[in-house]
Image (cartoon, rainbow, N blue to C red):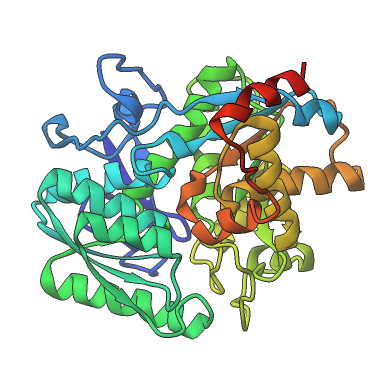
Length: 406
C-alpha cells in the first residue's frame, strides 16, 4: 500500500492521479505503509521489489526484462588508480540499453492502471527509447518532444518504435525553453487525459520510483552498500531516487550503512554543481555548451532534491571537462571491456578527479553508475576510435602474422 506526500509542505493524500502537490505545487513523494521490502523472486527484474513500487494490481505489470543489471568489480582501472574496491553498475544491459527502462516499466504500468492510452514526454534520447518501447509492449501511443539537435543514434532507435517525434527549437540550450516545454506538455496531458512521462520526480513521481531499484540491487549484490556512489546528473532525478532507495534499504534492515552520494556533471553544463559550491539553491544557467548527450539540461527540475541528497548523505558535487569524459569512455572500453555512452563514463572521470585532489583516499568501496550502452552516441564512438587503424593483409599472409608474434 502506498500514499502521496508533498516534499515541501504538510499535504498528504491517498494515491491519486497527480504529478504535483495541489496545495503548493511542489514535488510529490510516494510513501509506503511498511518499511519492509519483501522480495518476490518469482517476478522479473525490478518487479521482485513490487511491494515498494506504486502499482496496486500486478495484472497491469509491464516488463521487457529490465533490472537485475550486473555490478562488476574493476579488473584493471581500480588497480591502476590505486582504488582496489571500484565497482561499475552496468545499466546498458537493460532492454533498450539504459537505466531509463526502470522508469518506463513503472511509468507505463501506472498509465495502464489509470486507463490512459496516450503519453507525452521530453527526452534527449534514452528515456524516449524506453517510453516508446514499453508503450508498444502495453499497446499505448505517445508523443515525444526532444532536443533541437538530438543524438542521431538515439533518435533512430526511438523512430524504430514508432511514436510521434517533435524537435523543439533551443531545447537543451535555453532554460526558458526547457521550462516552457515542460509546462505545455503538462497542459496538453491534462487537457487530453494523457500521461506525462518526464524522467524527473517533479513531473513523474510514480514512474521515478523505478530508479531506486538500482540501490536495492547494489545492496543485494554487495551484501552491503558502497562507501561512495558516483551518479551522472542531468535533471537530477536519478541521484535523488537512488538515494531514496538506499535510505529505504537501510530502513528495511538490510543494511546498517548509508553511502555518500556524488553528483557528477559536465563543466560546461553544471547548474547543480555551481549551486553546491556556492551554497545556494539551484538556478537555471544561461547556456550549455557541453556535448555530453543526456546531461544537457540548463534548468534541472530535480536539482534541489540532489542538493538535499548530497547534504543528507554527506556527499558532494563534481564537474569534469568533456575531454576527460571521452577519455574515461575509451578507458572503460579498452581496459575494462565496458562499452558505455559518455554520460555513463563521466562517473569514472569524476572518480579520477577526486583521487587526484585527495577527496577520495583509495580505501573506499566505490560504485559508478554506468547509465547506458555505448551504441547510444555514434559521434562519441567515432571520436573514440578515430586513431585506431585496420591493417590490410591477405589470406596467405595470416600465418606470417602468427609467426611474427611467436
